[in-house]
Each structure stands twice: as structure tokens, then as C-alpha cells.
Image (cartoon, rainbow, N blue to C red; front, side, top):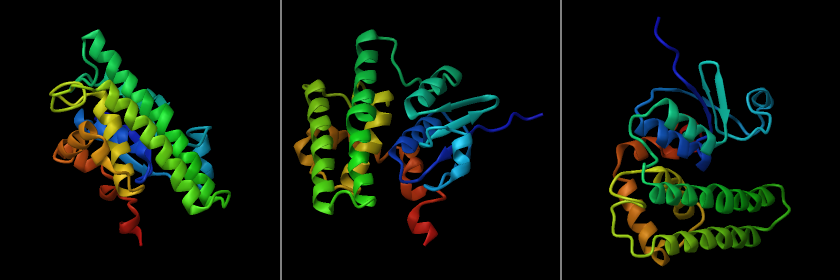
Length: 213
């Protein structure tokens, strides 16, 4: 009997879901895509905090993009995302955490504030720019002198999986000037040529807004 595919509970526009889609694609894991709507009350049974993504893999249910990707790293060793070298491993984890703890959640507060009418468009965008720019400046500083193809080497690793969706959101949704961040701008151009990254892009998902209008 064939094993059941993992199920990814996802939203096209979610950069957290985007990270997991990249990791699954890089590792060659076939999965079932299930769209989660903003007002989906049933999703709370899957993930009590109600954020995407969540991954159901057999009898294992994992939520939060970093937890999911670290689970995938253990379960599916093909295309390892964390190097054995401790210094490079620490740098990957540090960059991933800057994105998922110090940029994306704070950016989301401003977007949600706009949606709920608590912030005006200009104020919301100003807050988004503040946190994205602050995080990108820190990452550029960490990567000072970097001459590798990707953030921590010539192979795609965890840092890249987290950077690509955040840069994509910055460029396509928030008009971030990437010329201020030459390393990140260079990496992003390289990411967009990789099939796994292309397949994971928001516009290529079944629930992409342009496909549902």
C-alpha cells in the first residue's frame, strides 16, 4: 500500500507557507495542497493558533514554518538545508530567525492594522518598511564580504529558504528598494532561476488570487 502524501495547509500569499513549499520542493517531497481561508473556523482544529502553514505527515502534525522545515530536514535527508559546519549552521539559523521573528511578524501587524482600519495606508507601509529595512540591514551586515552564490555557500540552504519569500514580498508587495542590499538583491536573482523556488511562488499556487478572480 502506497504511503499517503503529506498534506500542507497553506495560503498562496503567506510567506511562511512559501518557505515550506520551497523546502518540500527542494527535497522532492510530493504533497497535497490544502488552501486555508482567512475565515476558516475549521482550521483551528488543525492548528489552534490558526496561522498557516501546518503539515500533516501520517500521524505527525506540525505547525510553524521553522518547526516544519526542521522536521522535514530530519525526515527527508535529501538536499540537506543545514550544513555540518557549526559556524555556517549557526549563520543559517540566525538568518532564518531574523526573518521569521524580527521581520515577518512585525510586518504582519502593520498589514493587519490596515485591514482592520486601525492604521492608514501610509502609516502601515511606513511600519512595514521600517521592520523590513531593519532586518535586511542586519542580514547584509552578517553577510559582509560574502562572495558565494547563495547566502551561506554555493548550495541553497536554510537561510535562502527564508530569505527568498521575504525578499519576494518586499519587492512585489511593499516596494522595498533592494539596491540598498546588494547581497540580498544578488541572491534573489539567483533564487528566481531555481525551479523549486519558481514552483513555490505565490502566483503558481492553486489559490493564487489572480487564478480565483
